[in-house]
Length: 248
Image (cartoon, rainbow, N blue to C red; front, side):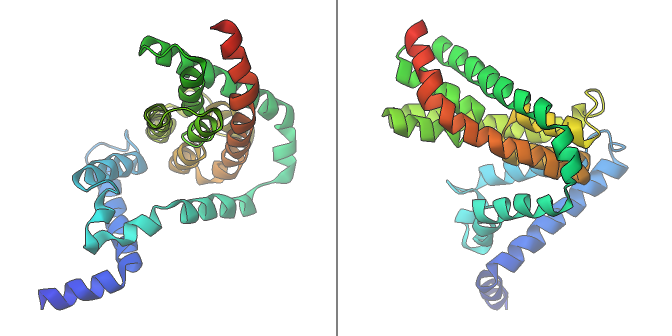
């Protein structure tokens, strides 16, 4: 009987993945409401729990276990990007235009600030060549900008891996911290969400963090965060690389 149930679940792996995520969300929201008095958002608890469960799996987390293989598709880039794009249906173009100048400034400031911090950390780790410094600095922008920059500059696989790790850490911190600090930084309207997305930049982290804060803000933050990734891929292997070469 157990073998039959397992076979059915494996054949319907994506549906089972939805069920698992739904149960995890339900448990975390129950804990957030009844045990911690909503001081920690349920989404933040779910993210931490998901990371803990992924640690128990292999290279692909729990998706390496045949029973949970559907999580690879559910948590993959295709459905993630589809969800981000779908949120644009709820965006108000007038509000996006009103944040145009502030959002543009936030994009450039966000990319430059993240890059400088990443380069500083890379230097303290002992990296001194411009290619490695630029690649790790780009990874501090997002985990997509890092490997794009490293591939363009011919960085080693070790350095590219570090750049990806830096971007992943930034995404996780953004996801968990956003709902916790949203009230104190005034993150409660489309204008501030657009600026926030431009400053932080990691689309996955911004979208998840804003979803945990107020789902109505997701389209505005995700929009500028998406431009952030493109801007980083343009600036890091060119202008910012030349800047590092000049400084070093």
